[in-house]
Every structure is written in C-alpha cells, then in structure tokens.
Image 1 (cartoon, rainbow, N blue to C red):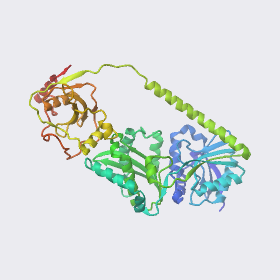
Image 2: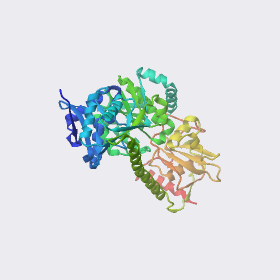
Image 3: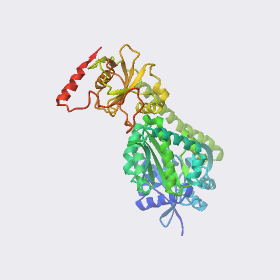
Image 4: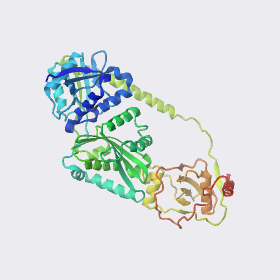
Length: 532
C-alpha cells in the first residue's frame, strides 16, 4: 500500500477523520498526549474562528487513514508554528505507534517543503519522545538548518508498580494528606466523588460544581479561555477521555480536579478550589485522592502533571525531562541563530507591551477614588438585665479556630488572630447556630468587631440585639462591621467547647412570619438600636 502526503484545512476534518485522529493518539502508549488529540485541536479552532483560515494540517495517509499529522498555523511569508501557541503545553507529531517510522516522517517533511514552509518553529517538544528526534533528523535530511534549545521541563512519573509503589515513594505527602483529612474530619465529612470514569456518574453531573469552584478560585471564570475549556471538556467527555473528581465537605464542593485518561496515561489538566477553604488544603487533597481513584481504574503507567513548576508538582513527580524549542529554516546554518534571535525579539515585544498595559490599568483601577462616606456607629440595647443565654462564649481550641479560619476565608490561624485584641471573645448566637460573633470587651461598652452569619436572613442589627440580650449589656458596632456568609455550613452535629451552657433556643429574634403579631414584636425590638 502506497502512502500519500497531503495538507488539509480545519474545515476538511470530518467525523470519521476526527475519530481516526484520536485513535492515533491512543496508540502511542506512554507517549499519548491530550494536546495531540483532535478534541484539543477542534476546541481551539472553534474558540478562535478568525484564525481558522491560517490552520493547515500536513499529514501522511494510507487508505484514507492518517499515519502522521502536524497541525500548524501558517502566514503568507512561508512561516509556520504549532497550532495553539500560548495555550498548548506541548507539541508533538501526531503518530499512532510508540516508536516513529522514519520513512513516514520523511514524507511528512517533504509535504512541508511542497506547501512552501521555509521557517518552522515548534515549542515544547518532549525530549523523551523518540518521535521528536526522528522529526529533527528528517528536517535536517531535507535541507533545513535546525536549532534546538531546552526551554523548560515536563513533570511526570512512570508508575510500573501501581498505586502502592507510587504512594510509598511519596510517603511524606501521603501522610500530610491523611493528617489534613483527619483534622478536617473533626468538623466536616470529606469525600471525593468521581465523574466520567467507567461505573461512575456522568461528567455532566459534576460540572456545575467544577465551574462554580473556578469562579471562586484565582483562575476566574474557567480560567483565561472559558469557551475553549468548555468545548474541550465536552469533546473529551464525548470520547470517553475526561475524568472529573470533586471534593465535598459534607454537601459543599470545595475543590475539583479535571483529568484526561488516554490509554495508560493520565494527564492532570487543572485543579480549582474555594480559597476560603485553603486551611484544609483542598487542592492537595482532591488531587491525591483523584490519583488513587485513577489507579483503581486500572492500567495506569504514567502520571503527567503537565509542564510548569508548582509546590504540588515538585512533591509528587520525580521525572523532569527537558522540553525543546525547535527552529528549522531553509537558510544557511550560520544564519539561523541570527534569525532565531530576531524572532525572539518579535515575540517578546508584544508580551512586554501587554504587561505594561496591564500594569497601567491596575494603577488606574486602584487609584484613590476619595472617601464615599463616614462609618456610622450604633448601639443595641438589651431588653432585660438578665442574660438570655441564647448563645455562649466559644473556647478557642484547634477545631474551633479552624472552623472560624475557614468561615472568614483566612489562610491560617495566625492570620485569623492577627487583628484580635487581648479582650476579644467569640459568641455562638441562637440554635444552629444562626451566627457567631467577635466582641471586644476592652472598650467601655462591648463592641461588635466581626460576624460569621450562617443564616443570611438575619441582619446586622438583629444580630447586635441578640448579643445585647445575651450579654445583658449594650453592644456598640459600626455599620461597616465585616459580615461573613461562608459557603461551608456549620458542621452537622458538632458542638464546640464553650465557656457557658449550650444554646437551647433560636434566640429572641427567631424568624417569624412578617405579618404576624410576633413579627410586629420582633420589628419593634429594632427600635432598641440607636445611633451614637
């Protein structure tokens, strides 16, 4: 059978060819890569239709099926680079076997010459992939001058000994996750649920939680490219490659991990978590438990954490093979370094310009807009001089401090305590509780400093009145007192140590129908709040 080389446009890829493309990637064994899939290519093109006309896919085919593909973006001057630059973590030749066939790659390079590519740059080609070196040899054989530079590294680990061996190699991290989980378990029940894997719920069942966590995280709405991420997730799910793992604390999602499973390789694509729960290390917990579930699925030979350093990657990956930036051009060998230097300058100038613009915009947005007003001080007066005991003073043991740290979205106990005075006390208000509040007793009149509200129907004024009745003392507060409405609810069935008896009622301002006599009485209680 005679192989045929040709070049396709993006719109010429039909469903049969797309399926054959992804089957190629699945045949690469431990070299399988999500960035080689048609799912990745199609989601990128669909999110950037204005660039689709520049996309070309040189390939080698046999009986209509692809043997090798190299998706590129071309310009009118004979220059080309890998498809999706700036979004793509790695670049490879798309093949269907672990080892390359040199004759096929020579045909592919011949097609590059036929369509007039005089200059080719490919970023982040894995040095561990034999196809990378075979392509470089084919380019040199065809008359291209080739310059190769190491730019960064992969973050991977081979796992021939399964979960037990992988866990043993990272025993310290596993112990830290266990300790974190046990501490969090004093307050909330943690569990990781898998979606999209065989025998689990469909991926769509967990996507709402995943997207909500992206909104909350520093990454923003599905990161920098929300439409591309959404399209990619849908395409990977349709091919049975996507895996989603969500960490729940009781019934609240606090972290998620999206992975891609291609044969014996799992790519950990992205992690998102609620920053308010940072004290619980939710990103680390969901990632580690997801690893365990991925091994349980069977046949896992390689963990791919994707290029780029991070504290998590540094701890749970042991192999860092180099990634290569390749520049190949039809110029004399001695000219190539000069050409490459010019291209690097062309690339760096727009990046530096965009960074300068972002800096200027940030300075403008943070400029002092002036004072909008002055905080007002109020005083809530008790209805009686006998404490109601509808709340109690909390004792600051470690679980209680963790609970407050998460509720107030602080990074740790030290940050949580930073603005506490020596006479500050926390009180539990009402059954449930409805809220907990920090009161400064150093002032002549107890002063409300901070509120964590578990029932948002209660206003700051109502909570101040509850405190006044609880303490049988006036309570002062500013209308700018921080009021936190945490996503994680008060732990079910958990009672912290207290300095007084446990709450037995809903408090003097429990929720009542707005039109009832009791409601009128509760509204009348608000008259006990006056400006001071």
